[in-house]
Picture (cartoon, rainbow, N blue to C red):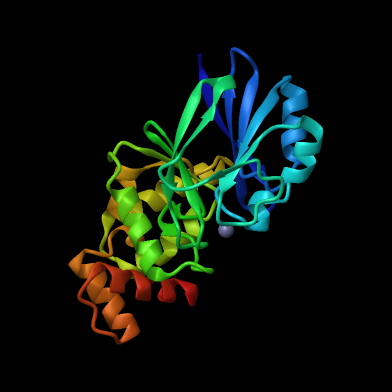
Length: 257
Ligand SMILES: [Zn+2]
């Protein structure tokens, strides 16, 4: 079986990720913020969706669910602790989510922080992380805490470094401007900027990304580095001596950037 992973652009800067089994022409939809772009794609390609996987409750991830559910009548997987429309399979961390039509088993990761119940879907060396980790950045804090968010990022850092990460927004260039302000001497930031500019000029997504690359330039994965702690302390005027405090004030810095 060949699984193809495709980003469908949605709204202003979201991606809906589709996992497509090209042999059986079936697909899994991740975070349908809109229905119409999915419906059009499935009709053009002759593909039948078989499940929706939802990372968290925000409208730009769930607003397409109801219309897709009415049309295709397929199960909706999502976090047990958040309100997700049409939810059929509530999930908690360490559960697994099976989609037999594509013969796939996802492992559920607690990625709380952006929202208090945010989950991620891990499929072997691929992580679908919603609004938790972005390339060169991370999601904002809504109803989760900085402590939860920091712990979620540490769980991601513990994955094998050749994990490929699929996030839900094209925010990369903006995030890199901030990464550059935090670490002006980091050459990995500069080369990622050049790489992403080239992709975006061709209207190509800057996603997915590899964990091992991200560890070199994403300041939110580098809150344990001495130079990042110093930059955050300098900006915030607060003495920073650990990764979690560094994350807390780095996030506040980015909010006002
Ligand atoms: Zn969100």
